[in-house]
Length: 238
Ligand SMILES: NC(=O)c1ccc[n+]([C@@H]2O[C@H](COP(=O)([O-])OP(=O)(O)OC[C@H]3O[C@@H](n4cnc5c(N)ncnc54)[C@H](OP(=O)(O)O)[C@@H]3O)[C@@H](O)[C@H]2O)c1
Image 1 (tube, protein in one colour):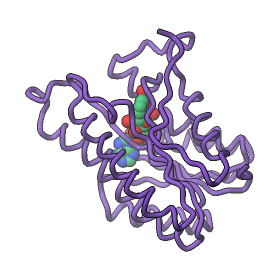
Image 2 (image 1 turned 180 degrees about the vertical axis):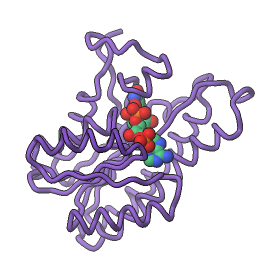
Image 3 (image 1 turned 90 degrees about the horizontal axis):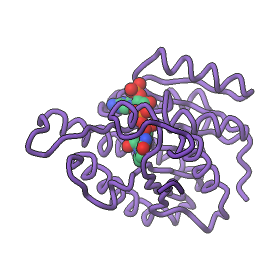
Image 4 (image 1 turned 60 degrees about the vertical axis):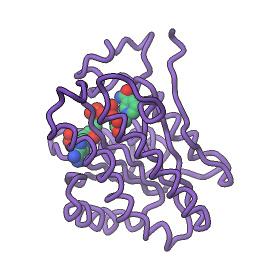
């Protein structure tokens, strides 16, 4: 089983929701964490919570849609962490609306954030993992990346792309002892899904961010010969 204590992780979109829960779960395992996002207030607050768990934690502000910002941000993170073992590509956005009615700019932003953003961050982190000949990348897709449904075409297209990117990368970097784990969760109570009115967040019924974080930790603890491909997480509640 992989020892997690003292590993170094980057969690994009770590200020809130699933990313925040993941960063906290990592800290509980003794992993040092860099979280990223755009909202400094939220990042600061989350870092304070993570640090209280006794690990090194800090934040870096960049917009994953901006390759130049990503390059600078990842460089800063590596010089602060010293190295990196785990990358969680979690930053993402969603919007609801028919293809016919959704603004072109909204459709574009979803693809830019969920697909290009993941590509930019991965491109900047990957050389460090290849150099170490070891590492874990966890890409957050969605059940929307497995099936298309009405009023979610941009998000669904972006998550299909995430799965394609992840499967290609997985097969490229196996030889470098790098695992690319792809997660396809269904609805989880987070700011995103609450804001979109997709759930009431009732913890008796709906998956919680902590459940998702547990899946990530479990995936990391699999024997190194095993990794997660399209690992779905569903609520037991019908
Ligand atoms: N919640 C669900 O039911 C569910 C299910 C399946 C998959 N997912 C996926 O899980 C991931 C996290 O979702 P969530 O529900 O936790 O959403 P969330 O609560 O809205 O959090 C999204 C995070 O991404 C960051 N982010 C968004 N756009 C960004 C940008 N352009 N640059 C940098 N950071 C950006 C946000 O920080 P800033 O706003 O500060 O930038 C925030 O930290 C997403 O990829 C989502 O598609 C969620």
